[in-house]
Image (cartoon, rainbow, N blue to C red; front, side):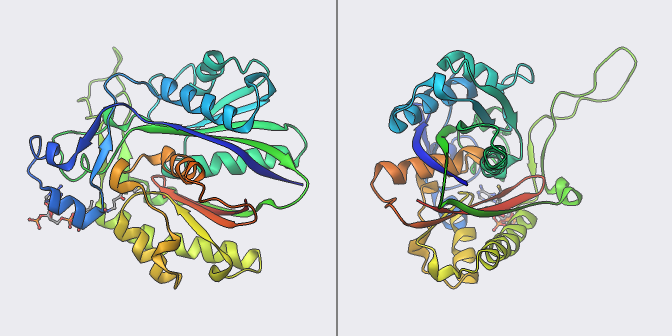
Length: 321
Ligand code: COA
C-alpha cells in the first residue's frame, strides 16, 4: 500500500514585485539580491488571503485529478501565516470548495509543512483510515515580514499549491524521513500576538519574522543532503537513481550547495525561486504544479521532495511518479 499524487494546482497573488521595486523600500539592489539568493521577484498579496489562495489551488488540483470536492475525506493545509488562529484554514477551505465529507485541519512545520502534511496523509492512508486527500501548502508571508528589514523582506513571497492524493497498491510514495530540532528554534522565528491582558505589564514584541540568515544557511546545506542520503540509504538507492530533486525554494546558493554535496548535476534541481521567492509551505507544491503543467513529470520518474525551515524542521521523501 502506498499513496500517489494524482492532481496538482497552484494560485499566486496578482501582484508581482521585482527586486528593483524593493530598492524603493530598503537599502538594497537587484544585483545583491540575485547574487546572494537567486531571487529576482516574488508575488505579494494585495488582499488575497491564505484561505482564498488555498481554495483556488484546490479547485485546480481537483480538476486536474478528475475528482469532486465530495470525494475528499481528508483535507490538510500546511501554513505558518493563517489569517485566523481559529477556525483553521483547512476548515475554511473545506467550506469554500464544498469538501463536506472531509476531516480538515492545519499543519504548521514552517517550510517543511507541506512535506510533513504529505507524510501525515501517508500514515493515515497506510492505516486504511482515509482514501482521497487534498494537501495544500499556502502562505501570505508578506503580512509577517518586516518591510523595513532588508535581511528578510527580500526573501519571501506569497502563494498556494495543492495536490490530490489517493491510496494505491504499489510504487507512489516509496519512503520518507523527517526530523525536528527545537533547540535551534531561535534562528528563524515569528512571534504571534503578545500576551496582553489586565494582569501583565510587558512591552509588545514586534510580530515579524526574525532570522539569523547565516545559521539558517549553514543548517540547510548540512542537514538537507544528510536527510536525502538517509532516505536513499533506507530505500537502498543512490542519488544517481533520482531523476528530479524538488527542493524547498529558499536560496539558489543553498540548492547549489546541496547538489554539490550529493554530487549531482544542478540541472536535476528545478527552480522557480527566481520568479516567486521563498513561499515557505507553498514552495514545493507550487513548483510541483508548475513542473506537472510543463509536462516535466513523466510516469515512472523517481522524484525526491525535500523541505527544511523554521523549527527547525527538515525531511525528504521519494515518489515514483
Ligand atoms: N541588500 C544589501 N545588503 C544586504 C542585504 C540586502 N538585502 N541584506 C543584508 N545585507 C548586508 C548586511 O548588512 C551585511 O553588511 P555588512 O557586511 O556591512 O554588515 C552584508 O550584506 C552581508 O550580510 P550577511 O547576512 O552576512 O549576508 P549573507 O551572504 O549571509 O546573505 C542571506 C544573507 C539572508 C541572503 C543568507 O544568509 C541566506 O540566504 N540565508 C538563508 C535564509 C533562508 O533561506 N531562510 C529561510 C529558510 S526556510
